[in-house]
Image 1: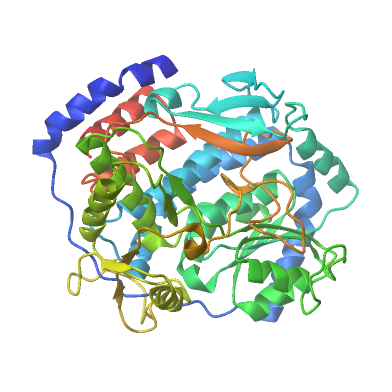
Image 2: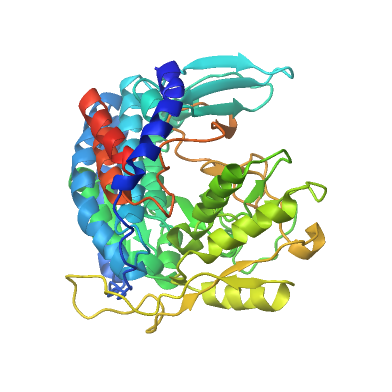
Length: 526
């Protein structure tokens, strides 16, 4: 299958180019209208939710892998159904900038794919077979896990590997099974503090705690995006009805109440180092060797500075334009409120085409519409960057007017505190490492490089969404062809993004030749 996917790339590129004259235009920018925040869940309701979960925690421990897989496959259908209204709510909160609901819909594709892949892993007894395995010269084991079966045609040319910790065996499922045996002696409730930027992170964190920690989950939705709460609940309704998942709302007060509650034994967050420190250390000074006052098991995925490192070579004009679009897509997606967004572009100072590429990138970024800076504190950080980084250029097209997002909710509160301010994209070139003032962190897909300690947590202390259940993952590595066809999913110039996302979601939930053909056809018109 992988050979078919790889060899078909040139043909797909030719057809994609030929069909360009039939492609529609980008849709108009849609202005955000905000959202009506949920009232914080009252303390008695939090207690009732915890009591319901407590009554079902041992039942969940006894639920077999095959029974869990059936639940996840039911969730595929409910998730696909919930995604349509969820995307409309997200557009109302954040706006859309040329691709309609496509950018938001793609987020739900990853959730559906995660559900399906988790189900397949459970059906394989937590030991799904890799595509191949190899050993590096230093003895480190590398397993290739993506793509498999029809995914190899869908994602032609891609190759995803898990690099295991040096000296550790390529065992699968043993850690997960050991946790299950431990939980049989007595389990507790897991608290997920939902990420405020991306709905897939919230939902896949919930699945991680349910399936690999074997804990029932209470998830507090982040106030920054609490409009997603009803759709998370609708998507995971089979889990809610089983009594193993509760969705609640609130801010610091409700979060602190849940963190300190005796029924909660595990805490997982995707967020900021300051949040982790507040939970784990409180007011106690952080020191190496000192035990933090919080005795609960706290796992965290935290922020990072993501570099794009460009290897010097002889690039054509088409190469530069292609990768400028790739970098821009990596920056502007979700209003740049992603931990994987482009933070730093590293080039060789002696690369003859360095300035030429920088100019292509400036031009491409300047074509992008400016977006509302909706994440709390982002505008202040943007202003700080303007004052502290030399040589910044403000780029991007102003979008001061346009249709407003439709919403069925009542009176709304703007995500940008009552006014839509379209912030520019900032670009500075020629910085030295000292001027850039970045923190270099090892970042693995969906987690932190092993080794961080509580007093210096860095980018976190765990990896999640380990669908293939390898016990000793060090990092993941994704290999891609130099050029990928058709127009990739997240390209901001993808004129068929929404249709492509919906077709890909159907494929992700039920991969077969019919759904593959539908997704491929949508991609050719992207």
